[in-house]
Length: 476
Image (cartoon, rainbow, N blue to C red; front, side):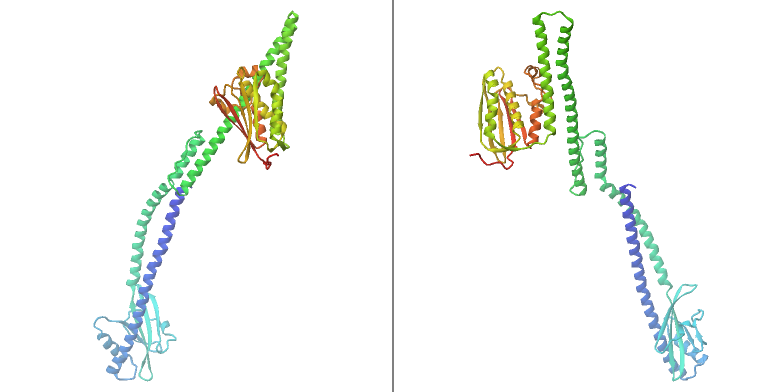
């Protein structure tokens, strides 16, 4: 069952129960109040008739003998003296002998049993004509005379009025339920409108449109639900985009890897076939063998780089305190021959602190970045910079070159495996596009990060942020 139908039926049922019970209780309370007044009136009427009978007996009969004639004469005189109404009364002797009866009802002496002096008994009777209140009392006439007086009061109108009220209330309830049903339908439709919109948005997202979002139109629970749904959709879209990017990077990785293998293998097979099938001079044989050797070394370097990348991703680092100035000096010594050959110089300005590092891997990061700077400045004169300093809770290395720079649209992809900005130049320089991927993994292992800022024609700055790791004391 739909939630809108649940709202409809629940509101209708609740309204029906509340108003039915409330109406019944109200009508019954009014009826009971009127019925109690009628009973009190019947008791008063019976008492008045009792007093009237005694008064008429004392003035009219003046005899203590309770005969049928005396009782009937007194009763008639009493009733004729009541001009407004003629009461329905019955007088009986103790031996259940009727002395006078103007009730027109069948006698029932059960009400008289056990009735004492100054007591009155009352009962509700249902007759063919309707409902009657029968009230009984005992009259002391003279010293020894005893009579029983029964008076009957017709209260049929009271019960008919109650039935009329029930009928009116049923009609009123029918109209109320009709109005309530329409109101409940309209209310359910209005309240659940945000849910229907959210359902449509959900179906569109399920259909592949991840950019659609629900409208937040209120600050109630539905508004919170729409906001939470949008937040979930944002997360899903981001994760889906990341999965697409990961799948694309994987495809690029496989394609680039196949290409990197295919190119040297094609050259090696071609030159090997020439050596095998053709007559060649000694110089030509040397050149062919030299090509095979260089391409073989290139494949060796590629396999070692891939091995390094796999090892870095899966190994657990053992960190130890490393002096940043010692690390920078060691790197400067390692790069000195290649920089001198390229006509470049390296300027090192490093604040001396102790950091928790794996020194060999951090050397790999800095050497890769500085070597990339050297390649970017090929054919130019200038200075490479290696800077280091504390910044807030981190220690930051800066590697800066004055090379040709990296296009802005390439910056987000330069750490992908096999990705090269200038593929032909990179291959000529012995690169395979794995260096920055390895650097990125090493920085992740150190809980750090690597940031790039580059301007075409002016150079690139790489910023390495490393946590201090509690080793923030300056080395003296």
